[in-house]
Amino acid sequence: MELQLIRNATVKLTYAGKTLLLDPYLGEKGSGPSYTGKERSPVVPLPISLEEILDGVDAVVASHVHSDHFDTTAREILPKELPLLCQPEDEKTMRDLGFTDVHPVAGALWLDDISVARTPGRHGSGAVLKDMGVVSGFFFEAPGEPSVYWAGDTVLTDEIRELLRVRKPDLVLTHSCGAVWGDGVYILMDDEQTAEVCRLAPESVVVAIHMEAVDHATVSRTQLRETARKNGIPDERLLIPLDGESVRL
Image 1 (cartoon, rainbow, N blue to C red):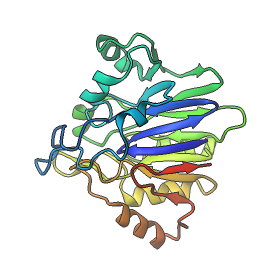
Image 2: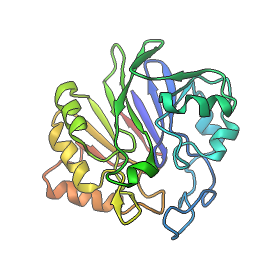
Image 3: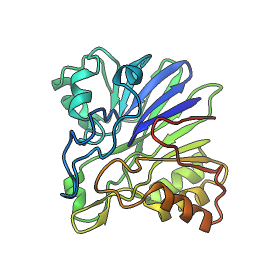
């Protein structure tokens, strides 16, 4: 298994002979909206070309359709015949955009040898949940491959704590920039919650993504590393890749 962080939550995951593109956020720097009024997002450019990103992609997996996860550029340039996995709530949107091979993941489905199961997420707390809507994570398993739990856009919840305890994924992908909404309400895990994930899953490798790409982020890579070290978490247990960097497991 190999994953390459592109930017934000966009990842190329090479898994069981397939290359999956997760949450394509493909526009140029500053091509999207600002979420706080500070700066238009994304706040950093893509580390590689669009041609390189799309090369070899067999399927797309969308955790939800917020503009920093499935942007205008992705909607325009992704081949419409590519298999596209999404939460059932987004099926109509994807079909209306012209995608012809849409697979809503209500519980679990198979993509050749890969089992893809939907997992719960909560994109914040309190009143902001009405703004955020429904989001999902996904759990990937395949013969001879490490299990991968992609938490998606969520804060740490009791359901996620239980999932980590029971399912013991080999690799956990967290969205860890501590993004905020409204009156400073966290809508993603911050550094302390990411450290807690590491403690809850002592046998897992945690890979923190969704970092330093949007203007409503509050946690930097450096801050996350410092918090992890203060909590006694070895660097090899929490990986914080740079944009364009690859991780193998």
